Amino acid sequence: MAAPVCLEYRIEGNDFMVAGAASNNIKNTLKMLGISSSVCTRVAIIAYEAEINLVIHGGGGVLKAEITEDRVKLTAEDEGPGIADIEKAMTEGFSTATEYAREMGFGAGMGLPNIKKNSDEFNIESEVGKGTRLYSTVFFNKQ
Amino acid sequence: MLHSVKISREACQGCVNCIKICPTEAIRIVDGEINIISELCIDCGECLRSCSRQALGIQGDDWNKIKEAPKVTLLPDPVFYSQFSHYMDPSALESVVSSFGYEMMTEEMEEAFDLSAYACAQAISHSPRQSLPLISCYCSSTLRFIQSRFPELLPRVVPVCSPLELAADLLRMRTNSSAPITLLSPCPAKITMIKDPQGRERSPIDNAVELRRVARSIMASNASPQPETDARERSNRWLHWARRGGEARHIQAFSDRKLTMLAVSGLRNTIDVLQELELGRLRNVDFIECRICDTGCVGGTGTAESRFLANLRINSINVDWNVTENDVQRAERLYAMDFWAIEKEYTARPHLPLSDNIGEAMAKLQQMKEIYSCLPHIDCGSCGRPSCQAMAEEIVRGHGSVTDCIFKLREGIATLANRIVVMSESQPQTLKIRGETK
Ligand SMILES: Nc1ncnc2c1ncn2[C@@H]1O[C@H](COP(=O)(O)OP(=O)(O)O)[C@@H](O)[C@H]1O
Ligand code: SF4
Ligand SMILES: [Mg+2]
Image (cartoon, rainbow over the protein chains, first blue to last red):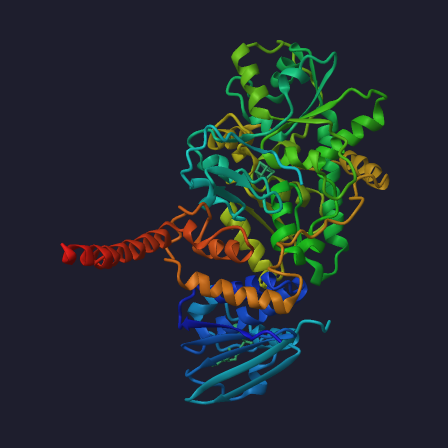
């Protein structure tokens, strides 16, 4: 087994302009490893939505991707406001995005549901006032 | 893989402008020689725009030879009609072209573009919600870009042949003539479309030349059009495909419901819109028209005229957007004949991974990260590669060495120079001994 490849990105809060750069980089890395394009797209969507949530809700944080031969594990961590009701946050269309974020085209409330849909394994932990931690794993050989 | 961008090695001064502007990072200058990596090139023509020394050009068929044939049949891209300041009316231009003895296809053009718009409208209305938006395939360069960068979006590309090909199909069906058909192309991408067709086995078009060549020779002649111009009914809808939004509007004209469509032009917008689509951000959109060239095909690199003026001219041509019952019936009849559909799926053309074995690829990726970390990260291009990242990738792929980077080379020379100084200061033992014996 080759040593895992670890990618780490510091995501600034409220910086809408650069949002998307990290997920793009993760996708390109997977392509260089020969991962199928359908898997690359799923990972890109997960990473992108996680990145956006760090920007618009979490006040910034860290996005990590740990790649081994059979899977990629994404972690998005922040020390922001946290989520009071995770079940509610996971429902399609639910969003607390600010007016400003909506004007920028974010806040459709589909981010977390889409992350879950595209993940093979998914988990989210949060504590109000402390922050949020999201985990997602995608396997390379599973459809 | 065939391409229509040609290189003149003598003219190239190694300025690296093209290397840095290429959206797919397909150009390298190694050992003083410029090269285009065929698998990566999408024929967008951006490199031509960046070159001030005419080291890059369009490789079309030889117009001087084509025009000597006993019968010359021209298939004009809509852009052709926008290139002349003194033939504002389409029929005037057609009469001038025919005075040169060339036969320019016109009726087939109207029919083929109507058919294409109708077929696209049908494809949209028959697609389930989650398969929308569909993407236009009219810009051949965009299609190639999707094939290599966004293969997951290929099922969204409308499975309808280019109306330029359909016009040639129609002519072939209706006449027994096998005289060659020559496309007047606004860009290298549409030349490549006939040399290396996507979605079909072979192109019904025989030759392609950049339309600038033909437009210039007609302009130079200063010929005046016949006074009595033909009274044929024309919709002129198809001419609007030369500018951004023309295709979308044409499709709307053949649709029963109001469609939500995006029409973007320019490299940056095209890349951004495809990226947003891939990330699932463009819900509730029915159709996306993408053109690599700014303002649409009037901005192609094979044109003779300012894209701004060309755009204005197209806009000032009388056009009838109201599709008549007759137009619909004609389109339906052609649609029923089925020849408009692509014959084979558009294939993905992804970038080669670092290795076919994932473990090996991961090891190379680590190596690449290490090499990259000791490069200067200023993407200067002096190594002949578009970026430090690309340089690191080439090294692990075995196509270069760290000393191709002039900063690394300089570091190497500095280290060497220091060693020379140290060495020059050390006393040669033998001399000293000899001196003492004296
Ligand atoms: N990192 C986070 N920190 C705090 N709240 C979050 C975070 N991520 C998601 N949320 C909450 O969950 C809701 C739903 O998230 P999501 O499904 O991505 O929709 P959207 O981002 O469009 O609002 C958000 O509106 C927000 O209230
Ligand atoms: S926009 Fe038109 S002119 Fe430009 S590359 Fe695409 S097809 Fe050619
Ligand atoms: Mg979100």
